[in-house]
Length: 378
Image (cartoon, rainbow, N blue to C red; front, top):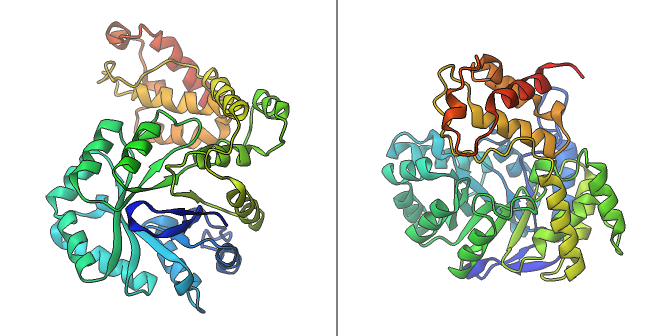
């Protein structure tokens, strides 16, 4: 297993980290302990030394699962990472209560890597308000956590603000060949690394979208390459090609995925893709981008809609389904809008949104098309 340095911590980490959010489950929805423990321990035995979990994963059962995995001598072989659910913090006391609950679930006396979970502009302010940073310092001084960091979902300026606000040891960002300029993106990756932070990558395959229902144009493109690789290998190698990346999380669901990831991460050295291969990945991104249906920039000038239609979100779901060739898989997100009565079916074609749209989009027709795409049986 390839090893990389986790920023200024000086810790040597396996390039592959095991994400415990998408573990195999039983028909009841519970984690399939026998299968999942076998998978995680296989990864550890192959050199993986980072297990990532969180308070809410698998309905709150993932931390308990990790506690089972690290029995039988495995605790000494891995770094454990979990996260404070900032959305559940509504007082300074909640920080302490939640953290103590996590220690109990994990059955450990120390968490190696502890993160503030899913920070954005609002949750960052909430973390500051309820003294989460002071708690991090306290727990670190008491030896209850070793390194402190945060995971992130917002725009680049917010990311830079958070990076500069506290002496973090590491951070975790979404990054893949479709998200080079999304959220923190490549600029955020380089910025954090320049500050000495270890950078952990989540969603390297965009939640599986880059390996499922692949458009034929993408498959044909990959077939052109001199070295033949699966879509998963192309995606993971693109991320690993960046030397600023300390560790890549993968939410593996089968033993076959574990074996494939172990192989790929053992070979994917920084700057190992050729110029031609980097160009091929750019062409793949362009093919996906050209599948966008509505050129909405999410500026929100169209809001509020008199009928409460969440126009940008409708277009985001519609574009995502088209880009990744997965309308059935995206239907549940549209149904969630319907339950909140914010779906495109509520549009009465008043035209207010079109008068405000700086992109001059044909919003009324596009809303109708999107609604049909998700409500008409194929």
